[in-house]
Image (cartoon, rainbow, N blue to C red; front, top):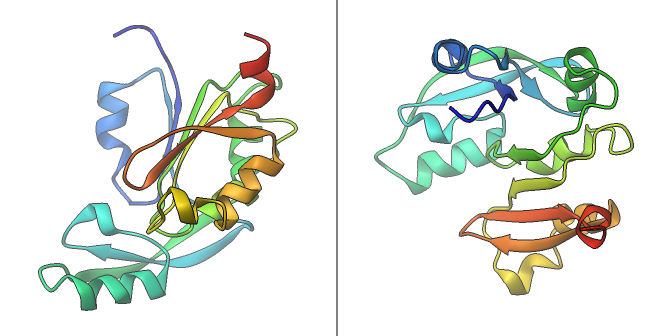
Length: 170
């Protein structure tokens, strides 16, 4: 409603139907994101928020939450984030906001980006089962700091990072 546009990526087949209807100016892509181009098993649950590529996490959730179960395992194409962005965004496109929530493989998504070419001002990333004390031991947190980002906020499982160079220049 405010004229914003974006690039939406979701691995679940059929996930972009609503996006195409509600956000017709956006770029909407159905694929997984990972370090290399390949096809992977994608675990579908009776609760779609649990869907994902991480076999160990999927099996753990089946054991831990008796009300949830895997309904299907399908093959889904996976591409590096840098490839998707290179193909769909003009060079120099400013990215204000990137949010990553891929059920346990968020670090791999971060690794697949070209941080010199695509540098969002804000990055929200899910880091499961960590508190602020454990944050400094997280591979994801260490990676984001190495990329020049600082932690600016946190919810239960989501950490909010801001590009430190942008923050210092405002």
